[in-house]
Length: 76
Image (tube, rainbow, N blue to C red; front, side, top):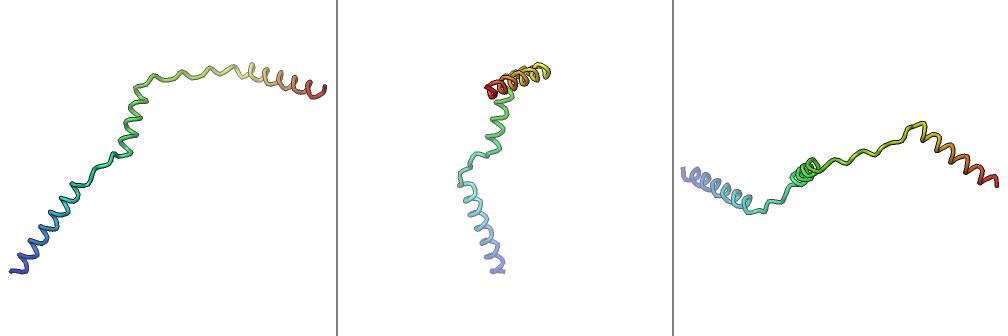
């Protein structure tokens, strides 16, 4: 009976030490909390307007014109 009582008291003491040790450790901020804050900040910010893309035909014409100028320069 004495052994059982000593074992029970010892287990309670170890449990108390573990709880005290766990509560004494400083709690570091979680990386997930930082990401949540950044996400909330970007959601509240105004969205950037998408850049206006030129018409594909106009862009193609510009590329061809630039290529013609480059070829002409190389010939001279």
